[in-house]
Image 1: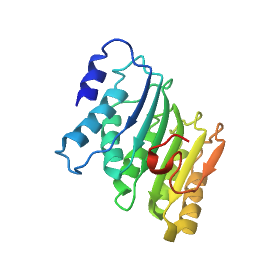
Image 2: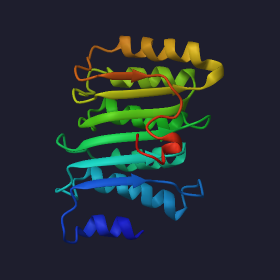
Image 3: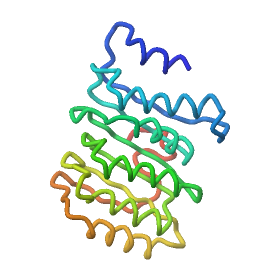
Image 4: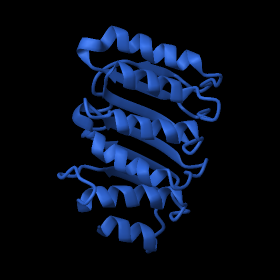
Amino acid sequence: RGLVEGLREQTPPPLEHLSLYCCFGQRDEESQGMVACREVGEILSTCKVPTLKSIELRLPDAGSLSFLCQGLLLGSLPPSLVVDLYGIVGEAGNEAVERLSEILCAGKMTGLQTLSLSGLNQEMARGFGEALTHAESSLACLERVNAGINGAEREAGIAAFLNGMRAGPSRLPSLRLLDFGGLWHGDALGVGG
């Protein structure tokens, strides 16, 4: 709650870089953590922190990603904001991946530089791939992508992801790394890599 209030008020000194690990115990819409996660997304997407130059978001579960995306859908991140997003979605992640895909397809996160989603199934992998090359996605800054696909569906999931990417007309001119590993950029999202 304190972080949300601090972001809203922008008390000195101005915030330029933010690294946020969003992990909340309860998984229902009424939990304070999920409400705060949604509010952080809203604050970021409505440009209430104009001095912010970069943000690193670490979301260790589908609920955190889903609620953050709810807030992000209310506006659009500034194109100059560099975004690194790391998330683990798991079996319950369909809604979270759909919301993130909606944000990407609407061109609301054009400063995205790194995107890592782990725990994807075949359906989520295809939707994720499609969102990256959607006609409106505008991901010219995207350099690193990780699509961590569940073990049993790994081969089919990789094919689905690549077919999804191939389906869209947009290109990813800055893409330097495409990985299909599990956890990435620090095991369990806790350690920078």
